[in-house]
Length: 330
Image (tube, rainbow, N blue to C red):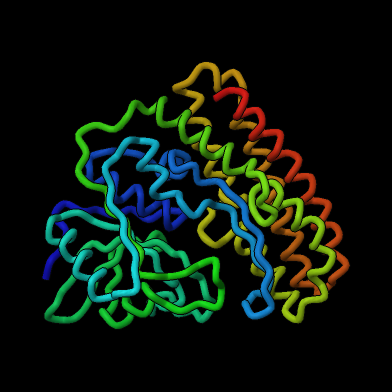
């Protein structure tokens, strides 16, 4: 059996930022989860509709590149890999563990037996903290659990390269490891770089399903959600993805407001702009939208989608204004 020497795990709100905290703690950096999420430029938005998926209409609020973007912003040495050869990926993972380097795996949550759920949720991040060839098991650090979780090699293999009907979330044995680093870039420098990256992400041109334009598209299409065969489940899942499924509340925006308060303590110019207070308000509006979608699903009233459309349209306006102010400052 091999467990990474000195590895410790602390549960958190979101899988990706909790995993990053674990990896950075192992390197000696005491960053909290909000700081890790913000340094990764983690806020995002995409909207996707597909009749062969379940739910058939989904949206999400973080970027796909949070983990590697944090490494870039801090100037950390990292390595990542993916591919269809599961045996090769596992050998690479074992080599890192043998060298006492933890790594993040990108998996399908519903394929992990300890969650006991059938609802597909690809893109879940866990940390590989050890393995035992004699028992044929791996030890995973997962944000929702204080203790390491034990999974068989077969279950991990199924989760790590799980076929999904959604082309947005291919699962191809993806991993990322942060190599030992003597000293990251100064925190203020990394924070400003992360803010710039996130502002550019949220103001993408020619990306109708993503960022601010994606919110506006959702506002236009909310009225049609009631025509979907699974409209009540779409609404319920929308509520969950804003408030419950690892976001920390407010569609990751509450956590990002905590990050902005840390930025403001270190950067006088950004402190004067008081962006954290604005992000707190935006987080509250996302929570309001979540509760509206919960109401849709519980009251089985499709007409309530019209109010949801008005709410997301206002949120899009506020986020566009917020990120415009960020761009002016950084």
